[in-house]
Length: 113
Length: 107
Image 1 (cartoon, each protein chain N blue to C red):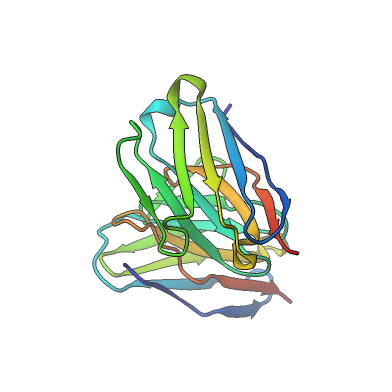
Image 2: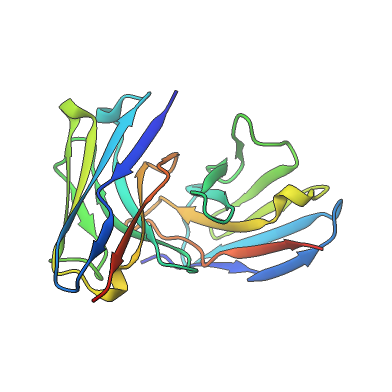
């Protein structure tokens, strides 16, 4: 049974940092490219970052480039998102997604003073 | 960046009606287009992959078609539980963009 579980969200002040984690099971994690998708309250879905199956190829949305870092540990079946210099507009539910197919339940990040 | 434009943004329909949602891409994406249903406080659920491929466990009233730049999601004989937001998503070119969403209300 496929499971994707995000953790690490919470309340942080503008300019602060958070590290999101995603634990995957039930599929061969190392065979899948992974991505982070976010959804601001009441809004649509926004692609944030992408990492290839090997971890060698990485892309970011312009809105987070230079502030967020995506990484993975295939030995631990885990995906990460280091978020620095957080802004109010980064407030969203963050989803960990395997290709297009497997989604987690999301973790809420709230950036507010 | 490939822009996906869905229409309509909102539709109010009665049970047993047929609904069609369109997703247009700003350039050809082959069949690399997927459809999701999202209910409040839930993560998106995959309904259709690669434009027309069905997903195990998804009711047969959900059907997808199209290729290139124009795609449709059809819901036959709508049920009350189909009230949700629907999104298209392309994985042809990075960044993997989404349509803006279509909110379906059941009268």
